[in-house]
Image (cartoon, rainbow, N blue to C red; front, side, top):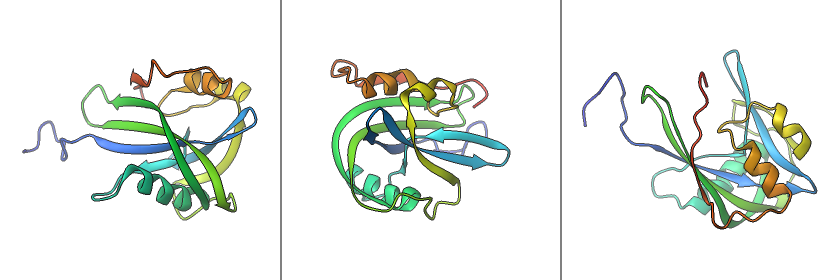
Length: 157
């Protein structure tokens, strides 16, 4: 397909992310890009020929120096910019740490790795904005009937 509105790639980007619990806290990473600072679930893009499980394990090593066991799929969400310039599909999997030492890894955008308590989630700029669902997940509420969370674009983000 050709370029439309200056868009180079017309395919959505597939991102895998981990849900790793420590009591009432969840593992998050803080990214900095220029003057922008925001939080994400640890994870990243799936490379060609890589399974979702393999991609998530690779990304956790790169971002947080952790080895994990990937569990069940918990959430899927879309993030599409209103102008169509970006489209991400995020698949969030439950995971457990099996090794490594939690610290900032080799991904240059990651500047912080930490467990964040459920009570701090509302104050964070989390992308995509699934703070409510993460709080519910930490509280043990079942989302089996709501795996697809829908569109999660935040204006200006």
